[in-house]
Image (cartoon, rainbow, N blue to C red; front, side, top):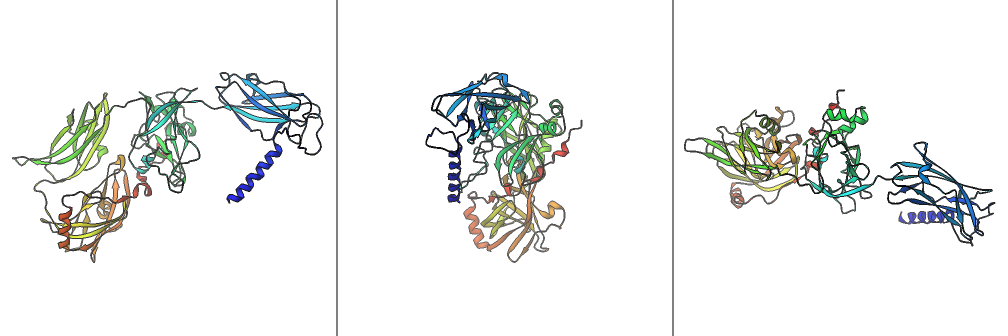
Length: 588
């Protein structure tokens, strides 16, 4: 194939040698034409780029006969949107050749401040008696255009919420060059934000990558009106196996497809804003399309995390983190949940609440509306809440600053009142993951509860948590607890695992059971936005209690040294977060 391509290249080079202008007096090609034989070379380009830093450009004119000095007459037309635009350019009416010269330069002048940043169509002709030649054309038509000038502002930060909506991974800010249009202030573009700098892209040993290596792509954002920011449909240049990812904003979608004005889409809440050097968009106001994955456009910015921070802008730190640190029972038998809250340096205050369950979205809304009880804190430290019932709970934090709610944080945990449950090591086995992780966790220890013979747990499962389940050895029924996996799935929070029977409320999709030394767990993995996958995973016993006790002692003081490999983030896109754009039509 390489040899074939070389031969083709040589043939093309030979062809060009026959069509280009030449001063070689040894070359003749048949009978000379009448007259001087003026022409434009057939190798001349079909387009010319006008520069805002120059005042002219050159066109090459050739002739067949070169003995004497001569002058060729030039006629020209210039059109812009089918209107005469020749007055914007200075085009000589002739071009002169010196004796022995086969080429001459026609210099066309222009004022860079007067031209439009659009396309001009030129038609040039050489005139005279018998001015025809087989070497080229007596008429040359080409376009000339000035590209929109872009000025680099420096390095800023971009937080994506197109792909992170689709795959549910963390919204990680990336450093990216930001440019502003030199003619249209407020028109910005990010230089290849979905190229090498994108935190989830990979390059491969075969020389390919998740992004197009042959050219540079931009993400252009129109913030000319800072209260009515929008994004036109654009190709990111990134392909994760489903075709190049396309992005758009709903504001421009409706302007292009529904005939709505910018004022109308802004009034409907679809535009972004540009304030204090930061561009943001409302939740669910952006669109993403992966052409080979699913038809149509789907709603993005599900987390409201899309953000462009201009160079030199320092953002206020309104962040928070929260953790469940344990429980306390006082002398009167009152039980309390203990949590630890850490606030960012610019947080003025924060509301902290203890809620039953793990519906963080509803809890945040209730905190902001004052619909539930909360504690207000103004500094990092410990918080306590009375809690007298066992169950699953969440600590939820909303930070405040600059007169508004800013960021949230949460921690979900299982809580029990009374004495701590004790366990005895019973078996050792290998757990085989299939639906959120992949691979085998070897030599995990299975424990039996000292107070309930039907309660079991596998220690150091998943991301170093206990995998708890009930196993009634009389009836054979097994139910996996609805519990944390220890893995945070981006902005959607904790990933949970549950028994299929419990999650679906029936046995139609499978049920857990034990057979001949192997537990078959019918499980489903899910997060706040939907599920990832479900089916059977196995735990096969490999040794009995004696070895289990030895293994338990060896692992008792240490955290898990390795974790199973996640494969659900790319293979199983979380479609529960995707909404067809037609559901969001503006009512005009």
